[in-house]
Amino acid sequence: MTTFRWRFHFHRNTWTRINPLWLSSGCLFDCHVLGASLHYRRTLKDNPAFRLSLDFLTTARSYSRNRNMNTSDEDPPAKRRKSSSDSDHHLQKDRLSPNGKSPPRKKGAASSPTAEVGRRWEEFTHARGKLPGASGGTRQHFDFSVMSYNILSQQLLHENSYLYRHCSVPVLDWKYRYANIMKEIEEHNADILCLQEVQEDHYVSQMKPSLEALGYQCEYKKRTGGKPDGCAVVFKRDSFALLSGHPVEYLRPGVPLLDRDNVGMVLLLQPNTSTTMPSPLCVANTDLLSNPRRGDIKLAQVAMLLAELRRVASRPDGTLCPLVVCGDMNSVPWSPLYRFLRDGRLDYYGIFRGEVSGQDAVPRRQHPLTVPLWPHTLGINAQCQYHCQSNTSGLTIEEFYRINRPCIQHGFSFSSAYSHRSSKRGEPEVTTNNMQRPLTVDYIFYTAASRFTSDPSSLYGEGLQLLARLSLFDVTDLSTVGGLPNASHPSDHLPLLARFRLHSRQQQQQQRQWPAPPPPSAKVD
Image (tube, rainbow, N blue to C red; front, side, top):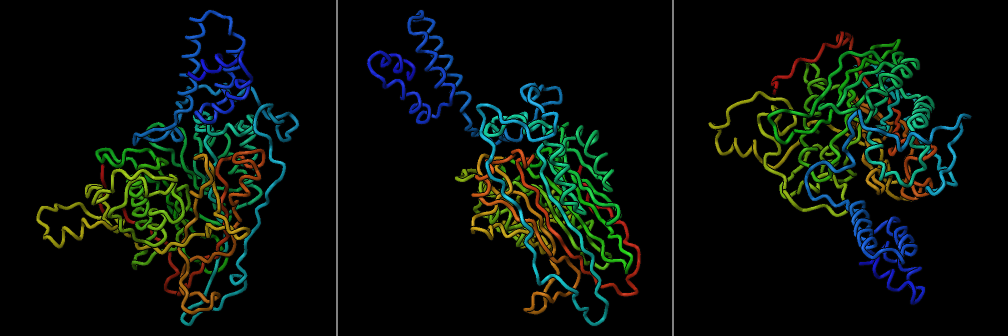
């Protein structure tokens, strides 16, 4: 009907010259409607039947391009991938310029940012210096750095090119992005890299050889279900030795809740040092389900990762070695999932599935979380530990309530390397804008050494001490650089980088080789 109104008023006054702009914003139509209106002016004397069919087809096309509301619980388009045979011809025509410089601005695309925003190191001065040892042992420490980085699978970028309409096409080219990704990795020179959305063909042919040439050892886990990407944990051979590696698949046939192809990895690393052998370090990396409406699946995936963490990090005496957990959690700070990871407990009665991650500005209050969250056949209890499957038909009322109460918890004491609030302006920190709004969804969690006095420089026992972190963007910074990715930032996520000090107190009788972790007590098909 809008196009008829444009033609009706065209010869009467100049209203039609500005009306398409108003209608295109008020009716949620895009520039195709505006272009169509200009075309209609040139076809006023055409056949009316032809104009009628053209009106219908153009309006229907504009509506279908802008209909982004999906009310189902399937994964949103942002996490659907093309098959390996799909073409990417729409990104192939613009390539990196031969001189290796930043690509030229594409005419009609969003302009390149006029100002760069630097990221500075935020150091914790109280962590510097030599800490005194406590009675009964000699304190040892080992410093290292960790990077967590979602590098954006190129196949995912092609599948969801509408999310990157603000970008100049040349900066989306894989050759250009790969060069900048490797430049960032070399510049920061982290001891441990936790990478997400690593496309397998790019990993095998390009990334792994380049990283090995830089002195890294690479461990990779591809997503299940024939998906093209996965997670990688990469560490410097001069700094660590691999004790054991454990891929985690969240897909469990026969468990309807766990029907997605996300994966994780858990590595047990031994620091290389010429002094007394410090405690091993357990490192985990994951990329959780993106769908903001399926918080129940996200919580179950986290529980599976934590169960494997406890199995791998447990010592024979029942204690745990220090841990670092990195990844794209697809959850915002202070959401129920974030609070569960940081606080170790979540009472989920009355929480809806769409509220768990906090990704949606206005979450859908449908489908409350079930009690229990996952079936007992999964082999994981409410404490996020492996347990033997048993028949629950003979349980008393008290035992049944204890097993099925709406509460989950874990025994880790995690801290976040970031405060999620910028020290520059007090605005929220941002790690991505892949859902078309600035969010923090990437994290570095670690088990901190416990304090026994009010003096922040006094630490007790084994654990990790945060020395410094690389600052993140806030909302203003993200607007300044024109969003992600851009000519300087090759992914729609920012890399997180933190420096830690590993403290361990070694007794002479504890100088023994770290045993391999026992197999899980319950294996679920």
